[in-house]
Image (cartoon, rainbow, N blue to C red):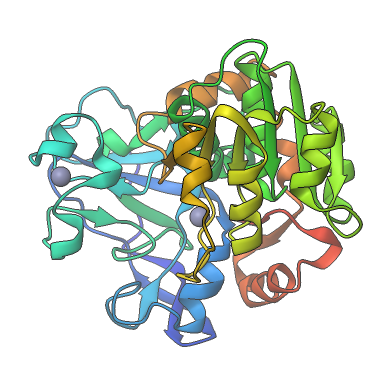
Length: 355
Ligand SMILES: [Zn+2]
Ligand SMILES: [Zn+2]
């Protein structure tokens, strides 16, 4: 067995908007964990909020802290009792570790672990409340690591974290063959949802948004687009569906107006998946319309039980993750990468740190 170093490079959030490259100890393995040499780790919109101190005291619980929750790498060592993984396996990592014992976890809904809000140690959200992967190595319970075939790069593996949310969304909203689907907000999740809706049989996908991302949406399979700078999203989607509305709409923008548009652009008996977060901003809601038209509204959080299938879809060429990696940076340029992503330079979808 090759010996592992005792220390590693890590991008450490020392203070708000202050990330420094430091030498820190390689994480020790608990029983059931594997140590992974990180290959690539994406920067998420949530990372921008975490580093600015928007969730201080919760994400992270305290400073200093290592962020990074969208990543893939190579298994470097196995802790006690790990089965099903071998040193050298290429893997993508999930970041929700449920307690495994509460009623939700036992039903496979570990994204809704009942222990999460008690801050009990049995639940972990890596990169948010437990150490992340902007570092040479990260330790994770083996059950959170999903094998990547050789044809799927680490950068594509880093996209799986958010992409799997799109898969969870199309499952929650029961997209069926022949459906007409509206996606509002063509960011990373929106663009993955476009592709996943198509992959499960939607025949028509309409994307509402603005700027160059609408071109990217078309490139990735959107049949029609509504430019919200000139057309109201609800009106545009209704016009394109002969006034009937979409079978299902996904809100991926996290803006109150987009939530309203998603609720209003679906047909009678339609479904709405709420993926974006408004930051607790109030949304004006016509509940009569929801009741009288029997609109199903489904919240979508994280990506339980979705990694293996999304990895299969990427490997099979049914979903293009590569196109969503806008730029890559080495670890030592992480602050520059954060700034470029905050400015959405070049219409950036994802900046990815390569390790
Ligand atoms: Zn993320
Ligand atoms: Zn639980």
